[in-house]
Length: 317
Image (cartoon, rainbow, N blue to C red; front, side):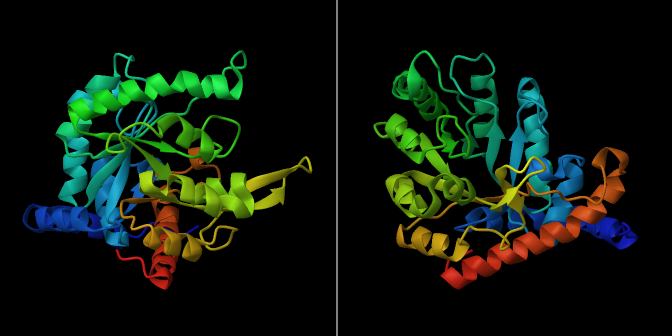
């Protein structure tokens, strides 16, 4: 196991200590980047925003995709009270908070408007929607028709509050696993208020070689993206599954993706997700310091791999 060095925590403390003088400028610079690379805060779940923000800044991230949902860094019922402090702590380290991951799927939930209002008032520009499920009684097309007014109502609320919702394409058998589902539901909705968080990993899982065609369908609505990788492998039962692996070790051609991204004139936050096993043993048996010590080199490696692919494609930071 890699020991947690005093140097790592001293660096974090030092960054936090000088934040009062330099972090506003750093945060502004991070927010001004065309394609800021953020970390989905789920992958630092054992740390508070005050703790993880200086460390992520030291690694080289530009920002954070903050988890504001059940089990996240900010709980939906506490968003009005606690989201401002979380955002302030992250920005104090010189990082931006352009996006958040939510549990929001409908405007009718009593927590939806308070959460989105708190997010918009604290400068978060986009939130990822929760997942939907097919209604077996309606079938695929019937479910998609049912979702249209749901997304239209959310779009109106987003416009009122000044924030955009984004639908992440995902693998599996939910609506949105096929990117055509997303296009069908939102094609007539103003893209300023409902967009797409494009996930190349999930697109390749579900689309194979035709992921490039799927991307073309939604590219004009893509306002943020995700970086993670996979390859096909057999599990312990001998079934083929999409296995999460480090960036650059799987089947996603990020150089090709970013070339298409550039050609489409896209720009926006790129959220790094680290879904492969990060730790040498059961994390429940590890201390906060041990978890941080093992996570830090993984953050650095994944970030370096992503930046290398972006540079090879000519994608600006």
